[in-house]
Picture 1: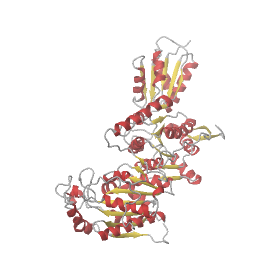
Picture 2 (picture 1 turned 120 degrees about the vertical axis):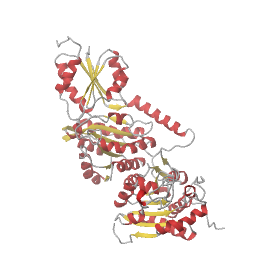
Picture 3 (picture 1 turned 60 degrees about the horizontal axis):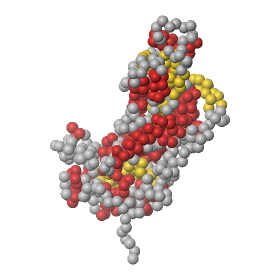
Picture 4 (picture 1 turned 90 degrees about the vertical axis):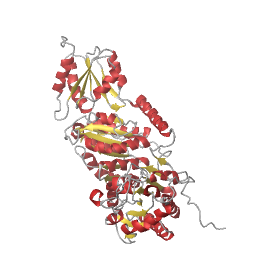
Length: 358
Length: 250
């Protein structure tokens, strides 16, 4: 980090600032609550730094503008919220299939359908299972603070370029709308060269095709296997997780994003009270940190998954645990944001009976 | 010896896959001639569509980005906005541009994107096997209008050139056909003009080209060519509908 400065910033604005710091000069989007701070900020800044802000006619158009920009090797971004992300799935599938980098931000509201504008984590399945048609994955980063809105957005651009794949920053209305101190920093790593693949005009070389259509015998299977190998490499090299396991851990809480920061308050309070409660926070939702969770389960530690939905990530936790330890679930679908006390009570209910704090 | 007819340099050697009597090959050639004429091959990026024309990237020796069905104007917007020094064209059929991609073409036109649009209208969905298109003529049977298109059921054939010519962001809008040598010459001129419109940064240059689809019309190639004059041109009149002149500001 260098040239850092500390400001007091809204999560959405921190994310937008990070995009500019990461070298993103092009934004395509369509307004939707609760992420409109992002296009509002970028519409003011990008034209002044030699970039372009385009308010598209729809989410469908904006993701395809991102496809076009990314195909030429330019750093670009789109952002939206849950119903808008559904509309973008077509383009995300094409980007994955055509190996076009780009950053997609989902500041989740609640669904299904029009749902509401309150924070939710109801888009976990959609984000981590590909979301659109076909056999593909998207790297999904889950910030749990305003600072991480910044840090993980910078990372998102690097990962998108490194692996030539769409990367999603999956936040929610709580992280997007709240204000916290933010240390802004300027990334030092150079943007990778895209000279060997991007559509830049066929000067001195044959024309290139950025495409996902493969009709030849066996061609598409070969392409899908190539993508699968890339996803396997991402699994090995890019899985990120925050794990805190006290000695003699009695139970570990698994949560991501805003649910994780609420849960962390409860975990800290219990540990202050002498209980030994662990904390596992997936930072990449795909690739999912199943190794870290398996290691906890192998010690026979029960897990409690906390989510702002009726139970989505808990399925991945169970897959990682493979029956080695009990997996409990506390779900908070939209309309009621749990307090640290709520989660404290949930944890206490699951702690081994008769073992009170020393 | 002076060659009077050569394959355009911006076309690859690959033979076209199009059905006998289809005009896509002729129209591909017109576009390639324009790329050669304006010497833009090395700075051209095209957005390919979905449908019979999706394979244009096999025939043009240029950089091409495949687009989802109907979204080529949005993909091209992303390309051009990030690369204003490049020449960007899209090539869409009637299902692509006038049905699933209506929003994208209208708004790209209205934003005055400096793009060249080649719109091939053959009044039918080609690649999916002859279903009704937004441009299918009244009475025309297709696999999804087996009794002929009827207004009460299906609405009227849509006239895209007339619609788009109304938008301030369009610098040039014309409808042409390639069914006779004379009309082919006019079509070439219109495609060239649509290229120039982009180079002069006068907004969208739009050319609708009436085209035959003998396979899905169930006709022999010569009958299909005759249908263009007999049935299509009366409903889709040819001509330049809009041309922004030199001093006209966008």
